[in-house]
Length: 462
Ligand code: ARG
Image (tube, rainbow, N blue to C red; front, side, top):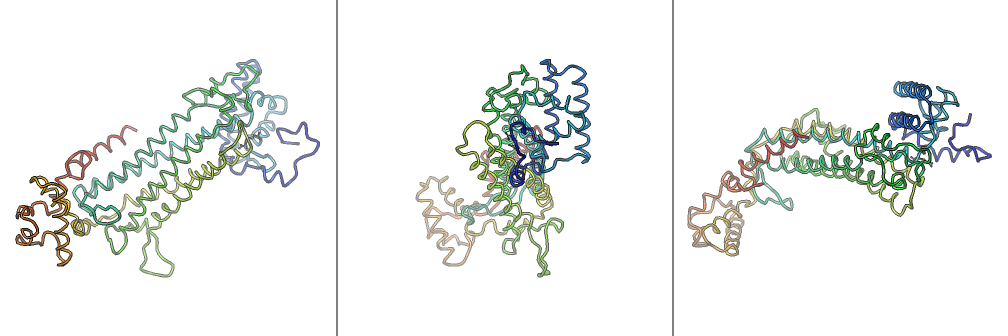
């Protein structure tokens, strides 16, 4: 029998080449449980509208239950001839209920409003899964910060030594970014809690169905679409999801890049756990940061999913166009990639060994305390412009003589500027420089402790 949902006006069946092009069942099959949930809700509104009697509704729901079980255990699957998941499941229902009853469910709905609704449901579920995995990573990073509350490291700008910072401060900066990503997912979810079911092909339905009841049953807290054309044509929810997942990838890639650098012989700031690193097939000594590199690589792929999708949407006229079938694979892929990447990434960060002595040793190198000399002078009434010059002169002298700032003698300091009395030494040590930056958001241990507890309680309330 012809399984197509649209054969009536056609004399011939579709060419094999068309069937092959048109098929989406191999990737939209993952929407099957959502399609069945939509069908249950739709059956109930058909009943409420008097289009299915009580007995028919009961048999319909029982048939859908059987179909759901067969889908779940794999005994029923879609085929290429089915075109898409919606057609396949209609065939499944017809096989179970017969054409008389099975053929009644399609009244008042279209694959256009169906797919727009199911796609939202799928992505909302995965936004929650990804948000949970992201919270696990935040927790691991918070644990890393907590384990090293007073470890100093060289803070960098332009990848050059800038000013010493606390390692915990640096790690928490990444947590802040990830926490905004988590917030983005939750806000996206709130915006996406609108059900297009009942929009029909584009114009709504003449059958007196209740889209609000469907929305309630399917968990759409904000009800049904206020405009059936927008309901079927809008895909900004997909683009926004692709953006948030790409942003997560980009934020991961920034952590990844640092782990890769920190793990080099030259930095030697961290050692990766054996279970979260890989070896080389030829070089026996190698221990590679593959998880971080895959994170860096996959971020490119996540960005590609976003840009590809935006290109598909650009200039697309209202309402539904078949182009929109291209909207699913990119974001399904974004979900799949993050759902395998995040657990591995979290494991890598949770098991990182931090070499705090090495970081502390390098913290004051590269004259990173020059700013402290300038600010010390400012506190003594020297204008910052002069103070900056004087501190710069100290660096110049040190560079010429191959010494560090604290190695300048009292005489040398006095030669450079009469303002540089021996008391300047008080700011030339890292703990002093760190402790001095005690304002909100600063790198002083007390300020970082505040950040830490803020991030912990934020994570706890999610
Ligand atoms: N497989 C289609 C998609 O993913 C479902 C909607 C098809 N609608 C249609 N009129 N052909 O977009």
